[in-house]
Structures are given as C-alpha cells and as structure tokens.
Length: 310
Length: 178
Image (tube, rainbow over all chains, first blue to last red; front, side):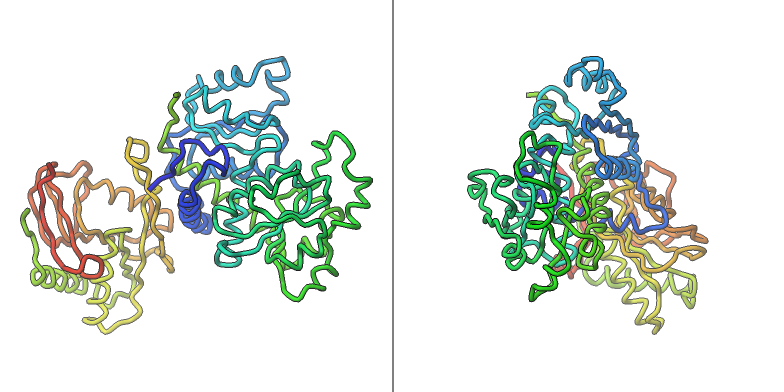
C-alpha cells in the first residue's frame, strides 16, 4: 500500500484512497509522538531540503520537526539571506541544492505552480508547502484529519470555509480534500473575496456569515491575506470584523455546538475573536499538533519513491 | 507444497510453547508478552489465551509492537508499508519481555523489533518465541529461546502460516516459489 503519486504537489492529484492511507499512517505517527522517545529511525538515510521562498512559522517548524522525528537529515534554506537576492533563478537554486544529493524537497513559493515546474526538472520527491494562491496540501490534510479526530468521520459532514477565499491556498486545497472525502462544503465571505464560478468546484456559496454558521458543523475560518490584495476589496478591517468576524455571541446564538478551526496565523479581533479562538469549541491547537503527524506520514509515504523525469 | 504442521500438531505445539513459558516465568509477575505486528500477533493472541487458561491469571501484560518505521529495507526498492498499530499499555522498564513472531528467517525483523522495543524503556531481558525457525537463513546473530519447529529451508522457499481466525484453517506449509 502506497500513494498513487510521486510528489505531493496538490490535493487535486490525489485519490480518496491516498488520503485515507495518509490518515492511517498519521494515526501511527501521532501515537509515536506520545511516547517517551518521540523519534523513529525510518528515514535515517534520507536528506530533505526545506526551501522557503516565502515567510512561514508553523509550516516550516512543523515540517522540520516531522523530518527530525523520522531521523532524516535536514537542510534549511530561506530566500532572504541567500543567493536568490543576488538574482539566481528558482531552477538554478534548486539544482545547486540537489547536486548536494538531496532526496526530497519541501518547497513554499509565492508563484502558483512553482512546485509543478520543479517536479518536471528534478528527480527528488517534491512536497508543496504552499504555492501562491493555489494549494497548500498538507494544511488541508491536517484540517481534514483534525475534523476526523473530533467528529469521528469527515464523510457527510457540513463544513463552512469562511473568509478570504480568493487569496487562500488553504481554501482551495481544503475544498478538494473535503470533496474527495465526501463532505459538504460551503464557502462564505464578502462577494469581493469569493472567486467567480467557484460553485463549479462543487461548493455552496453564502455571503451571510450567520447563515453559514447556522448551516455548518465545522467552521474553518481563514485569515484576510492583506499582503496578497493589491487593490482594496473591502473598506476597512474594522468593517470586515463587524460583518464577518466571528464572536462568542454568534456561536451562542446557534442551536448546536459547532467546531471552530483556523489554519493560523490568527488576526485576533478581525476574523476571529479571542473568546472564540480560545474556547473549547476551537481545535486550532489540535490542528497544529496533528500537522506534525500528517507531515511525517506524507514524508514517510513519499520517501520510498524517487520521481522520474519524463 | 509440504505441510510442516497440521491442525492437530499446531495445537500441541502451541500448548507446549505456552507451558514452556509458564515453566520459565511462573507467576508472570514481571513478564510481559509482546507480539510483533502484523503476523506475529496471530501467534501471540493464541499463546496469550492459552496462558490465561493454564495459569488462571487475567492480569498478564500483553502488547503489540509495530516495527515498520524501524525496518532497514525501507529504501531498498520494496514497496513502502503502511504500519499497523502499536499497543503497549504498560511500562517495559525492568520487565522480562517475550517477543513473539511467527517465522524467524533472516533475523532482521527481530533486530528492528529490539530497536523499537528499546524506545519504550529498558527491559531487564528480552526473549524470543517463534513458531517456525528457518535456521540456516540467518543474516544476523539472533537465536530464538522458544521454538515451535525448526526447519531447514533454502531462500527460494517460503513458509506460510494459516490461522483459523483469518484463514479458516490452522496449518503451516512450506512452498517453493517459482
């Protein structure tokens, strides 16, 4: 049993069975992480390069921890303070790193599609740690894994993704992942932040956040990505918080208890109030914890195969 | 295909292995039984239930150990394996551990199992019980303490153990792979 892909570029390319395999493997790694010795020697002959052309805290630490807990050798690279600022191209940078005999590359890049480009030019296994506004597959996997852990199952559950859908790679990967697992998905937010024709991905669209909360069992709340918005899409953050921010009163007004998620970093007081983010309905820190187990599973399952140049 | 142990013989062998354990670990105060996932567990389940009936004790510590992440052939071109569950709900610190597996061949699985075990603590000692010992195929200096049956085989042969619980029959056979 292994994955049908050689690289984890996006959830779009995965089969539902691949996702279940990753979950089953992550269950075991989660249990490894509870042990006194939180480390297994599975990848002691593997070298992984973490190449981050964009800022990251959680994802980067999570990947690095996952690699170290699998006993892999890790090299880190970030675009600031490297030759990229001297004008080196992506392919040259990566070729130089790979010529030092690296087996796997974890890459984040601000250009959508960058990992696909890379996978055509190298024979190392590529894991996409977020590319532009396209996909962030490990985040979607850990989100679905956390839902499965909290609710027992993902199939048939109603999940609302709320916030900046347009600029969020987490949203797109989540939509693919949840659809493949048989969940019902709704996106909600201001019309300017929801891409046109998104219904074609098989999701419901809602512009009233209260209606979305009333519909869903799980609310995955996303950050407003001001750094990617090059023109004003809403008047002020305060106004956004007023209409789309989620607070305690809104949750208490519901007849049921929904689960609240957030991929981080949270802008407290904008999309999520502290009285929601820190409540026991929130599984935000479980998501972070599951992130390590999910990334260990992905790295482990991809480690057996080297990609082949077509 | 040659039958090494039939239904009746397997039953007698299991009884004998369990009695040998009782002989060496009377009381089972500091002794724990750990089956190696996935196939050793079928044997350890049987041994455990026979032990319960002959000692009348219900509090013998029994666990299952998955060794997938400790294997030394992950990148040898073999298909990557999805692990089974590890379930050791007790401390092995200072205990006498009896590792249980169905077939002892190269010894590499047992090497992995010992590495995996040591990540859970420092046992006082570790013993090995196997149903079938393929004695001339060893690649590492590992020998069993309790053996169901010793067989002389060559590499191209394969020992298959069938269990009633999953295969609807109890039988051990030796086949020639072609």
